[in-house]
Image 1 (cartoon, rainbow, N blue to C red):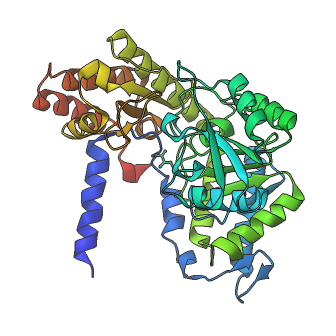
Image 2 (cartoon, rainbow, N blue to C red):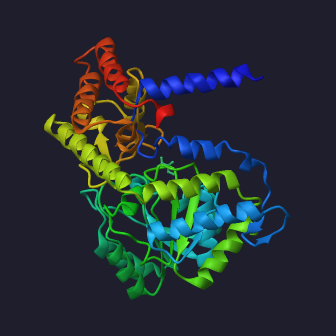
Length: 403
Ligand code: DSN
């Protein structure tokens, strides 16, 4: 009926299959997750929560949403979960509303050092509803907990926010909790990027420590595109539920909630733990190989790292991103700590291995990827030569529709 869109889906399938996906926030969801997303559950209106709906006929979606909640709680060791947030941004909006009144003060990471738009950007709702102040990374690009404490004592925030979009090192959530307790404020964690590592036990978990933890479900967690909010505090759980519905959202997406339930089940398996261990290993291998090749790399303790392409290749992040697309490698330009270029240019590139590892990228492949990128950005090998290497590698991996 709609050949135009059908053909474009095929075109996107082909793009996903022939290329190497290195955007740190992307992944390939399983066939089971995708089938739930495309299921008849999209037909159902279910405003409210299980057993407390504004519509009839919710007895089946009630069971699905209850299973999703129970699985989220089991996976992350949480007492309460809200699985209705349509996205990580919506989850953060609801978390802020539950934690403080409008105008409340949040201490979050300097946005150019790796914070997210909803962590106080002037172009996001967050900075219009709340008063954001920021802590920087140190000169090495690492969190400086003593400095966070110092700023928190000066600023007296209502909330300290941890969890970032481009931070390549382990976060000490216990230390953040101690700072919050010392200054007498709430702790919020946006674990969207590292949720898969936390589920697999490969990064310390903030869930028992933070007042509220938010995440997306589609990054390292490898589920459908959506959000999740966790807390151990019953009073906060009630506030979160009212903030999600009816304050910010209307009807929940029960097809996506079913897909989230499947994702939580998948993430609670030994094969997912093995997958996340490979992601970490591949990321570190690639980051270290760049270093050996003389490229300025942040190194990595998780699923991503940053490259300083300006110093290493004399081109900015925007140019490097565009150039790599010529050889079917997808990345994104990214600010690096102390960046002198604006966010629409940047000196850096962010690289992650969650997606490519799902398709079967090995440690040897990850090392070769560093060489291909280096060869092409330094103009020492031709486009034909590099793109042929990319296609040889991706043709040995699983296709996106087989995952
Ligand atoms: N847009 C996401 C990322 O790429 O990190 C954050 O939500």
